Length: 313
Image (cartoon, rainbow, N blue to C red; front, side):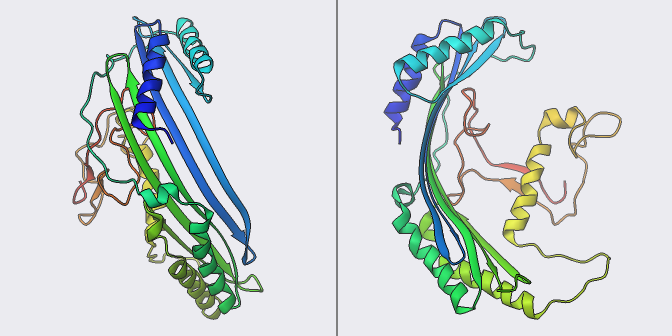
């Protein structure tokens, strides 16, 4: 993984090669370890290390070009800078361009876990074994996937911007099926820390669902039914809302916040009073960055808590 000084040196090197007025850089280094299991046995174990430098060059009149370097050698980085500048030279000016951000004060987040960042397959196998043991105990067949990742991200530009952050993430999902394939159960867990991933509880939950589903099946006629979703199901649905909260999408008529005939629904009550939705990058159990705009982008503003819906509004 790249240290803060490593990423600062890389960004300074990119900027030193740049000949255009604007140059934005993002650096990422991700270490990914995983185990896949099926038929009550481990089938795949993997380790992946990916590094990349993304470069965006900008002319005085707002023409932009971007390129990516996956090798961190001087020659590869220099070539990528030249490619970005060549693309900028043949691009159209961006009418929405804004000045590059200068130095920013980014908040301190605590979502890096050292144990998770160093974990290998031997730390995951006991969790997988607990699931397989639960499956065999209940005469079921298990399959699933466990993974952990450690990510280093940095951003910078010619205007003096620089940000650096490390974070970790881990997850486990598993499915249990009975021998006849007529019933199944599923469970998942996610956390910044692999220590929070409990294979025993994940296996017990999926096994109980499978056994209960096999014993309590009944036909449901077409109609409306009240459904109580698990946190993972709610998370997936809420994730789709993320694509609708952008001002551009709403103003262009591309989201649920667009008003028929033009404009947006900003300020109108769209949900019941018991609905409140917030994002909190400071939650230590969630992977997040100190700057907004995703994992990359040299012009990122400092991240902060946001209330998207409050009491239905």
